[in-house]
Image 1 (cartoon, rainbow, N blue to C red):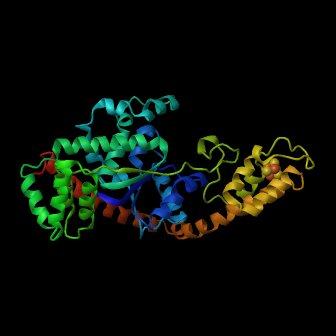
Image 2: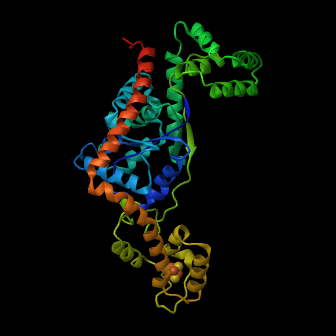
Image 3: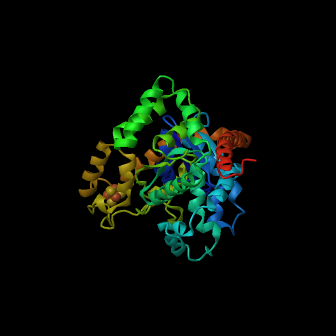
Length: 398
Ligand code: SF4
């Protein structure tokens, strides 16, 4: 397991809006400084619901990746790649499908929700039922320790953990496991004795501190390869080798980005500002935003709590501007267009570096292709190693 490794992805939806930026990508930009991040264009996933409208996928991929880069995703820090270009995602998905009970997929809460929500589409397909399994494969093929998700996605991570557990139980016992674990133990050097003592304390008396202490030794050891580390992790708990480690959900706060009408910003509500929307359109859109209906005339006082513009002040304004809005709105001391100007300024200020970062990729699209090609190769290197272990464990190592 790579405790510090993160896997996250987005379906290619074309140009992104500020809701995507505040809800997901800003978090990625922060995480890439502290974690080993894999950011994936989930193009296979786009097909699970849009298999009948594939024409725009490629253009959407490039537009979306440019928006990632414009936001500050840095390919020198994070691995940025396209899911379908790393064939091991599909391969592991197939391998896992052999051992995943149908009922596990049918009970995923989003399955029925989505079928109801997208009732105009025929989603009675295997691909749609299996998409949480594909997500599991996406995570497990990198042995990612952490997956940033909102509350609603936690059941998917739980499913991923169950599948990993089932896989390890079925295939984790190598014929000479004990012997291999003993060889790995020696590689711990001086710490091997403590590790063995802690293991005994855990197995005999169930001491949780002993288990934690032994895991720390494994984490700190410089001499172990991935396979030996996982062998010892399994041996420690008297289980087999952990081939596919269980990932943890990294809970992220729900996006707070309101749209132009006060609902959550979303393409389907038609209330978005795209990340690289031109300044004139941004100005026009914000100036046209609805306000507290009580403010019919400039002289009518209003209540910011009833106004979508106030919600954008929560994102873009500092305390003193917010105090100015509260006082000016409730006393009719300011007009709504006055009130909207700091929001317009805030959005334009946020977008400025995005335009600058996007510029070279727009003028030289080959730079984006090169970044993706390098990311694909790096991702595939990791995924290939996992699949070698998976194949060997499943008796397909020939
Ligand atoms: S002054 Fe500002 S907060 Fe008050 S209604 Fe107008 S736009 Fe909304």
